Length: 550
Image (tube, rainbow, N blue to C red; front, side, top):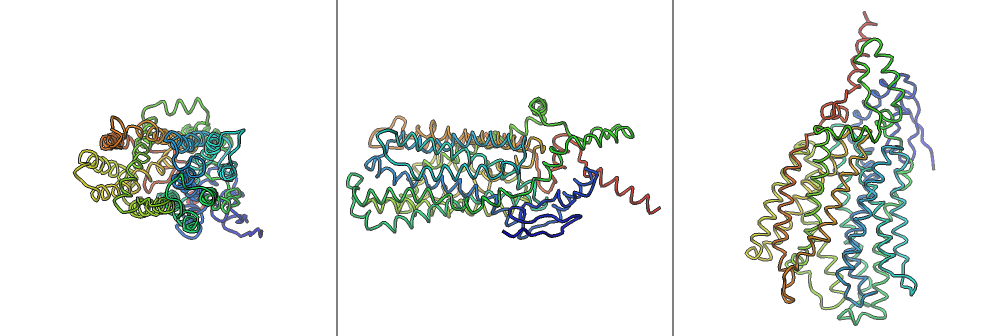
């Protein structure tokens, strides 16, 4: 590996590996003794970067975790259809399906809180890539599992999915805050939205891989009309397919791992947290001349300071707003999957003449749904988030989703299948051109550097708790009071419940301020009462320069 060295500031810095995207801005100005001036110069260099190939590489390196995350969630839904022919003779118990799906979410909650808090203690660089290693290991281990009299397949499989979820969860706060802290102010929202939009790419990727696999094994699958008939070559084909499908998800992660392990430390973390004591000494020295200089340094990070800071309503309401909004969204975001069967029937992809048709139609139908609503929603968010703002998009999304879900719930039987399809696609669109993207972006930029990762992890974990509730509690209500020949009879009322959560999301959004086109330092000054010392140093050096000329 060639270690390219070039000059991009005061000193020579390495641009190998991950530093091609996440550059060593601190190293560029290592010759500047004043830590405040070094901070100002580094942040100015980031803002001058604009949007180019460097930012594209940043999006690809940071976004690969979300691609893996959504790939796995999409792939396991398709993979369960394959698994049931291998281990359950074509009919998997509903409780086992729920357990397999929820296990990933449980791990994700642990990873979001754990990695989020650790990143504020040891730094972004120290653990960025570790979450990807966990994901890769757990994915590979899942693909090597098999039946044995000594172990329960479901138990070990779910354990590995919890472990994989921990890695996936760690990627949420890390990729968000690293993208935020390395991005130029003008395009920060678009860059973060593009990182998150890799979820859509992951879903498409999973659907395509599944369709290719099913088509490749067509001759083995077509003879089996039912699950009971799927034996011999059919069962072997299904066993190979689910392993390849799930295992393929770690390929992008393996490619990006080197780049994650070799990024530079976030300049804001290095200057605000690592160099805190150095800056504090400078502030103490300046305080002997001007007493207000003592206030230019934020308090040192600690659990006591975290409780003190967010224990104040003016700061705590922001954390409540980010966490509450994510919770409300994920209840409906994951719960809307309950409607997928009806939608697949509407677009003609619910045929089950044989095992091949069932697997192929499931993959193709889900892929069509993703392309129809989800992907365009991501693209609209990327294009408009730095123009309209985070708050406007999130608030508008929650309002429209409330209306859409109310119509789907209260007029369920009058809409007909085509009407349900139209509103389902609209809901998918406004989830992504709305709160699904903004709930990821806002926590990555609205909190002080010393708690940015922790607060993002808490917000994301709260959202995943909503997903678990949707999958376990609310999801089971679809058959509440239903006769055996009338499955899902309670679904309209479940959609009404989701509409209520979207309505509550409107009020949690009102707790959040706007952050578009503001530097992270301006955000901290305006919403967290901290002094933007980059402005102070700019004024000081401008004054000194003027005095020298005179």
